[in-house]
Image 1 (cartoon, rainbow, N blue to C red):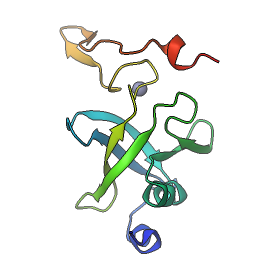
Image 2: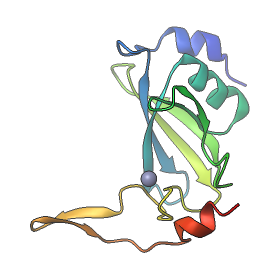
Image 3: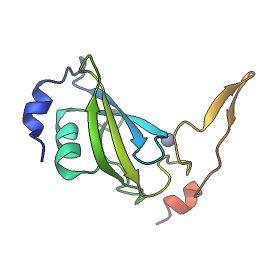
Length: 130
Ligand SMILES: [Zn+2]
């Protein structure tokens, strides 16, 4: 168990009360996504062992996978030297990106285009079908 309160007290949140959190696959080490956490989202991530962000656009908690089922089970949480960002390693239940790609970073700078270099694993329609 971790002492979430003690850990959160040492983090340097930005002027909006957020820290960026990179999520990496705990087995392949592929970078999956970047999100933002406020202190309560950090607490929930540490205590509940599933990645929880703060949605800046919707101004609410966003438990990754809540609607798609593609949760991220937390394996470890690390902090950087400046104490102002987190690196979460996690086991993904499926593709992390809402587009159905394994990673949000599925397009590379090639020539003048952001070129898709990774396949869609599950179509977005399939992911979010009701
Ligand atoms: Zn994405």
